[in-house]
Image (cartoon, rainbow, N blue to C red; front, top):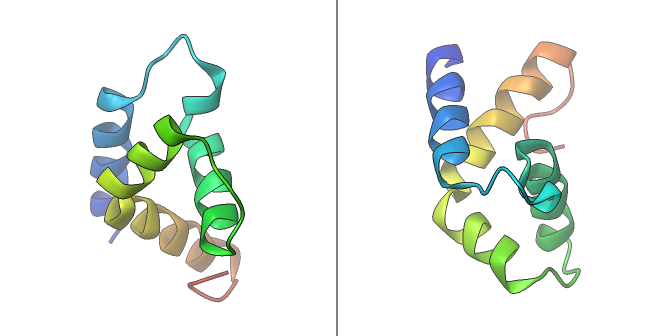
Length: 73
């Protein structure tokens, strides 16, 4: 599980534009959680979410497991 999360972190970083602060992995995860709840997100962020949905889920699950939270929190 840990290796998968690290690999997906690298995959997302390859795609994300470093100059745009909206596209840090942390912000993409925050936007993903908001998007999941039905809030509006900008088109470029949505594109990243759709493309890397499974990797983002894996990162969230791994972090939550590490922090003792439910997997989908």
